[in-house]
Image (cartoon, rainbow, N blue to C red):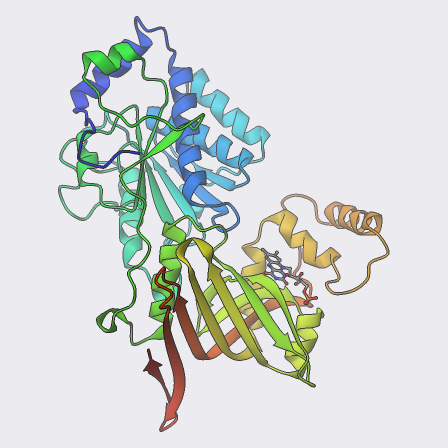
Length: 451
Ligand SMILES: Cc1cc2nc3c(=O)[nH]c(=O)nc-3n(C[C@H](O)[C@H](O)[C@H](O)COP(=O)(O)O)c2cc1C
């Protein structure tokens, strides 16, 4: 890793083009090879920060040139890394290299989506890979890419009902930016991650997102010497290397840094956990108790924070389901080891509406939709073969492309908090604790803060 801005080289557009020519000239590389290594570098950087357990659905938006090809390769690797890549490739390039990449993705059943069928706000995805324009792009983006770029650029403003927008990963150049001057209008894409290829281009100096990586581990020493390139060494066998520091652990919460709304405080900490690369930051221990007060805990996955509560999905007939129906008091616990933080949330649980459960069910990948229809949570099963047989029957009944109906016993729960506790450990052993209590004043819920 190298300190950004210190001793790293940035290339002009002209230098980037020359280096590509050299690589594919005397140095004997083919375009296929460079694209393969670039795409692998992009997929590796994504996997380093955004784990597939939480960031499953990836939309890779590919432009007509080499940058789009890098995106197609990245999509293939992401599939093998456990993500569900969807590809939007509105201007397929009719050359064997590109049609081969398309065939490879089709053979993995990676869906190609039409631009017309993309939801306006692109919120159905966890990651958007911007592989539209690379370092050779000049001028203003033309349709249909201009509209896609605008939609990505406006995502930052979207925080309706606490729904998190997808993260944006730009391949080499954030599309629409000037290759040397950056986001000159100030209204362009603001990626969360930039994966520079070969060496960062000048525009990368103005990148201010949390994750800057370098990929394309193929630069021979002759090029390094001729261009006096200062690049960070790749660690071990990695295909990418971070440039600059990873996001820092959040500062301790001094009085002036505390949000009045505990949901905002939670979102801040959650974002930090994601940025710090915590594994499955949405895993939370859910504790319920039977009507006679006997407790039980298990891990569930936070779906989202929505309508004033924390939502997860489960089998309504499970032990937790039975206990919640008898006793709606429950508690959630998040523990983010890398940040030495925990958050406790206590309150009442209710079922979400049928429509909301339908939405969660439809957003699940097909193989996961089948599971709740087959699995009887918290019951003794006659054997794995019986479950496999049931799965097979369901797959035959609902072939690829058909809708698997949501079983009535599967749906969402929402915990509406009455109390939050944010806790952060400190090497000095003077740990910090911040508690929010719900108080009802004239029927309105307000939060009292105790530090
Ligand atoms: C990382 C992780 C995530 C999980 N996510 C869920 C979930 O979102 N919903 C769920 O019902 N079970 C989830 N489980 C399984 C539960 O921990 C538990 O085994 C199951 O729900 C049955 O619990 P019960 O018998 O106490 O009802 C998860 C387990 C792990 C380890």
